[in-house]
Length: 420
Image (cartoon, rainbow, N blue to C red):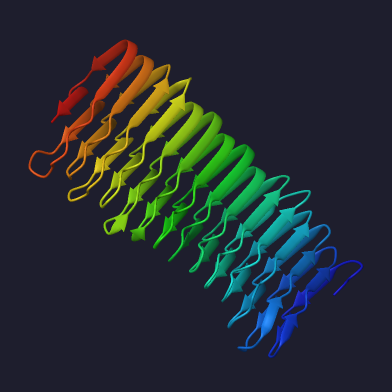
């Protein structure tokens, strides 16, 4: 379908479909702009057959592609050897009101989904982008924009596979906003794919948003990587998790050149009860690091495996306040060692019941706490602790090492404690 100018689909479908042998031919739609309302573009195999592949769907929208309660889908409901790519390209792209772009395969996985705004933004508002492979790997999902990418209002980006794992998710833009939405790469068998957000200016994850990489079976969960000048995590969660089976949790790597702010949020790496594997490391590198209002950076093992290490490097300063902290935990009954907590900065401040805590209630040794700073300030209940719970633990507490030019202590319950 080729329109020399504007192309509007209203309550209409463009479908490539097969019920027998052969291939589903590629679908190409061109116009400037392209607007779909209550409509769809589909490449489908609805009947079990000897279909070899479902061809690509390519939508080229010139100035704009807009989906309003509409879908673009490549899907195999039975058995094919491959589902090819779904590609959307325009200067700007908008999806809203339950719109979706997806690729689904039932045998050997999925082709990729690629969304590219070449001179503007990608806006996903109450929409979704997904790739699912049953018996194969979920295809790669990529969203790129020269300006901004916004994923808002209960939207989702999801790559999963029940055979060879979830495919990678990559978002590249000048700025990225994830608000009340979910980005997830995971599966029930062979590991989750990586999740990467790369922004020149800023990344903001807010309002109960979640970035998840999980594995439910025999494979490692994927790495989570965020890279921008400024990164904000507000009332939201970043999580890498091994839930059941044998597999390691992925690494979480956050790089914010100027500053990183976390407010009432969680950054988690976990080996769940029933899993066998190690937790992934959490590595945060920034100019200035701030965690407030109960923010928890937590590495824990509840089963057979070591918790991941946590490292924060922030030359301009590290602040934990109002009940925030870093926690490395070997939970009761777990057979593994805790991860270390390492903080390197010129100024480290813990106040208003903030804490750095390494503990074991299980059969493993708690992680060490290593602080390297010019000035360490523990105020108004700010604490550093290493603990082995006597009644429940057969492990030992970790070692606290502080290298500092100056240590300031003030206020009730501030200080350091070691209990073995």
